[in-house]
Length: 186
Image (cartoon, one colour):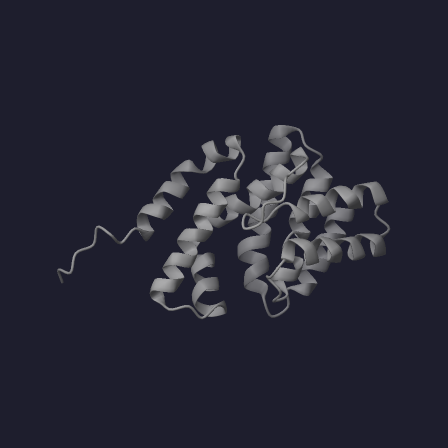
């Protein structure tokens, strides 16, 4: 019940950035639910945190979105009447999900959300290129480097079970970004 309400709120906040909802948030939720089931984590906490994990990044505020997003999640969940103890758990998942920040993941649920986020990056490299070139307006070399760095950070934040699941996609993505083997032949 709460997860569906949260989904609807996040979808409504994606206006103008539907690509973010469709190509990142939805895959994160799918992966998070799968990991929660596989690892017997609290599925509701994981799903709600997955819907909300990038709520402020999606709105155009990617800097410190792990902090601003956890605060926005708290506001939304309180408004919905979600139990306070569970809000704290969702907030931790969001606060600890980012691969560029070193926040310790203290729960299995936080591991599920962080790994689901990373898996979505590895599964949808075109989304990362879209962010690099259309959102960040990077040139080709900068964009390639940004995507490669993002993929490497994503790989490093995966829990061991998720690494086994994503290894082939990661290796293929990194190989496709390695231009050192290209020659100047035309």
